[in-house]
Amino acid sequence: MTGAAPAHTSREADLSRDAGATMPPATPAGGPLLRVDGLSKQFALDDAVLPWAKGRRVQAVDNVSFEIAPGQTLGLVGESGCGKSTLGRLVLRLIEPDAGSVALDGMAVTGAGKRQLKALRRRMQIVFQNPFGSLNARMSVGEAIAEPLLAFGVGSRTERSEAARRLLALVGLDPGHAGRYPHEFSGGQRQRIAIARAIALEPDLVVCDEAVSALDVSVQAQILNLLKDLKARLGMAYLFISHDLAVVRHVSDRVAVMYLGSIVEIAEADRLFADPKHPYTVALLASVPAETPAARKHAAPLEGQVPSPIDLPPGCRFAGRCPRAMPRCHEERPALRAIAPDHKVACHLYA
Ligand code: SF4
Image 1 (tube, helix red, strand yellow):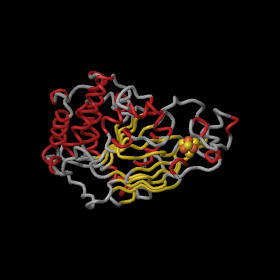
Image 2: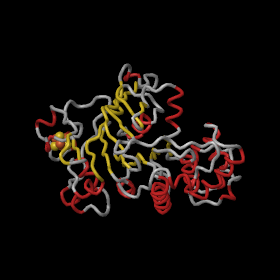
Image 3: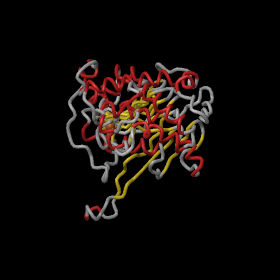
Image 4: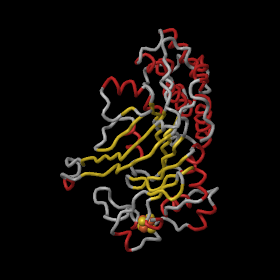
């Protein structure tokens, strides 16, 4: 884990001047902040659009388990359509899982009643890819940032307004611009506003769903540095979802690699980038332009078709593209197994 500040001391200095704000209960010492266990989700295909797909379902997320420690960033990486954004929404229960459980600080998110869920949602926020779409064009940015405080009855109107100005300053924007509207800001500035809104309630966990993907490379770096700085100052954890390994590498303490709805490798970030084990991780790293000489040296380019998530093969889902596939790989699905402390791989090469 890198850069995590004590969870609530700097927060109090930065944020809790909001009257009525209450600090969330602390995570038990040594326990995970987030525990995800066996999470699965299928979607029915729309047979109005695809008549041939009547009654068929897509396995978007399949039996996914992982933990995130307080103040830790878990990067979740994989190709477009692998289920990582669905997983982020399942964690926040923005969509309901078919199976599995999510717990924050030992409290069940899955199965929580309406009031419990609202209390838990205060501690879990999300930053989306498109900051323009996630901000109300008719709301000033000060109102947008203060809106979560209003929803939870935090502070008076004046106090919320002051909190919004402080949050704008915290994300590197001019507090004097609180009365301006989203269209008056650049894409990077809008994402800073979305981040200010996400941290207004002092969450313990922020899900960043392709949060920098829509931004220019130079602006991406600024936002990534802002996220790292906020984590160090406020002590929150991130589930950082991205298709871009270079971006994930920049911010993550641990990394989970997802392929067709499942985690195929999860490890501490430096270890995963220095010594990837799963052939898919190796191939992904080979496509990153720099800093992965070991991976590039051994990697073959990714070839072959991704199997249809409607009609998944019986064995390893990567077998059709894997340069190291064996007969067993086409028959038996590999389980995610520990090969070292905090390093798990789903591959028969390591069984
Ligand atoms: Fe390749 Fe077989 Fe490992 Fe799948 S289980 S990644 S096909 S070697």
